Amino acid sequence: MIAGQDTGVREFLADSLALWRVDGSVEAGALPVVAVVRAGGATVWVERPAGDAPWRWFVRWRSPEMQEERSRPCASLVGLLNAVRGALGVERGNAVRVVAAPVELPPLRQRGRVGVGAT
Amino acid sequence: MIPVSVITGFLGSGKTTLLGRLLRDPAMSRTAVIINEFGAIGLDHELIESSDESFIQLSNGCLCCNVRSDLVLTLGDLAARRAAGTVPPFERVVVETSGLADPAPILHALMTDRTLSEVYALDGVVTTVDAVTGLATLDNHAESLRQAAVADRIVLTKTDMPEAQTDAMRLRLATINPGAPLLTAVSGAIAPSALFDCGLYDAAGKQADVQAWLAHEAAAVAGSHVHHHHQDDITSFCVVREQPLRAVTLALLLSALAENCGADLLRMKGIVHVAEEPDRPAVIHGVQHVYHAPVWLERWPSADRRTRMVFIGRNLRESWVKSLIDLLDAEVADEIQRRAAAREPEIIAG
Image 1 (tube, one colour):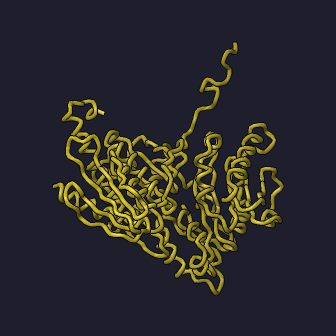
Image 2 (cartoon, chains in turn orange, green; image 1 turned 180 degrees about the vertical axis):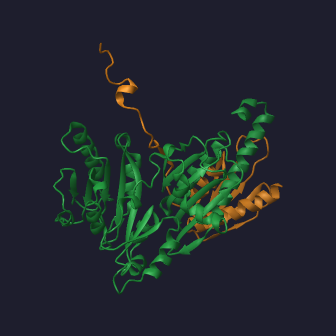
Image 3 (cartoon, chains in turn blue, brown; image 1 turned 90 degrees about the horizontal axis):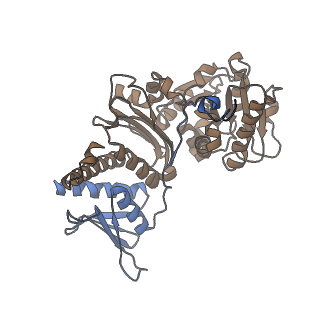
């Protein structure tokens, strides 16, 4: 089951590279590494930690200009993508912004903002 | 709420002609018009007969570049003047963009400004495309593609001219934005009812119109459930899911779309079966990374209770979106199970 999921994650990461317009590759790794992403000289290892870990994913990466390998735990797939983008230096979109929905509001008088204190 | 419609279209595509003709219709009598012209000396407003004080010309530059300082202030000022009775009590606003405008920042401003959102609601985007030069314009100008891609209605103009490539234009536009009804207007002649009230600003009261709003989905269901169009790097597709989405999955999905697609996601809209609210579908609508908070309908508009989401974007892959939803849904389900196993039954209840 996990093996099938891991294949899906690798395919998804490969699709993500295309979405980000990054030339690179995604390969399987030795457990707990689910995927090894290589692009632009950088290598990113995506791990699925043991079941009792407080995070769902663990991402390590290294690039030629880095002195040391870096890592980041991620609580969800959204965080995983964020970490991989950061590791590869991909500049993408902004944080989601949810704005008030265009709903009909009752007139101010009915909302009690007008006439407060009036007799 | 006062509906705001945006009329956009490339230079010379017939926006001003269309608007001028529309404003002669009695149905448009209570309409405030904001025209944005690129250049110090504007002419478009001179071409439209109006003595109304609620007719405003913005010629400080391209609206999409100065949207906060121009459009937001202008709309705010207009609302204040309306409230004070110094302009007629208009019931609709039409914004005509400059021909070079990218509509997205304008839509963002209309969706996100807190003060405007108490008075105005985005109705929809009407895009004019010239049947004579439109093909070349779409090839050569990214702005033109974006204008067509975000449209709720596309108006094909100059179809009466001998050089018009009407059939080719129809095919091209159907691949760029298959969900937008494609209309024609010769010399700007078209009924206002065909162009306006096409948005979801009063979705809760327009149950039946949701299906029309999701026109792409309707077309997809009639065919192979999912349509794919790749041309001009613009992709348009509909994702249909039988299983309800948990609310947290939906929130994670919107985050992932915004952070990973960026400006490539031109428009997204959908009706979502949220597991926690099975009888009330949520309507979602976004432009790039900006989304309206979900509008909850009182009931499903039809017997079809599947989640249906329409995506229009550049370099956007249907397989990526589908996998994203599948993986997020599996992750959320697993997390719920993990917490349940750790004796946190309230998570399941919630």
